[in-house]
Amino acid sequence: MNEFDEIMDEFESTMDEFEEAYEAYESEMETFGTLMEASASEVSSPETASGVVPAGAD
Image: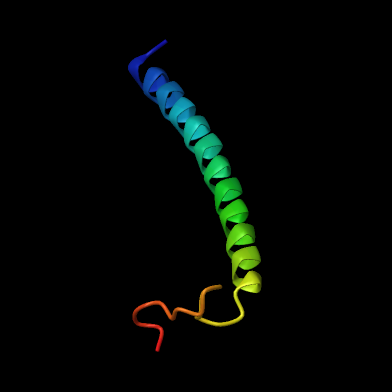
């Protein structure tokens, strides 16, 4: 195997790792988005359950 082939094998291996990591990232972001949507739907106003308005929410 020549040096070019070794470099290409390393590149392909790195790209495979990148693709796996990116797919995991996308999955985590989808989960995060779902959690944010659920959280937003639970909050109908800037007031908390105790009636205290968080700083900057006025």
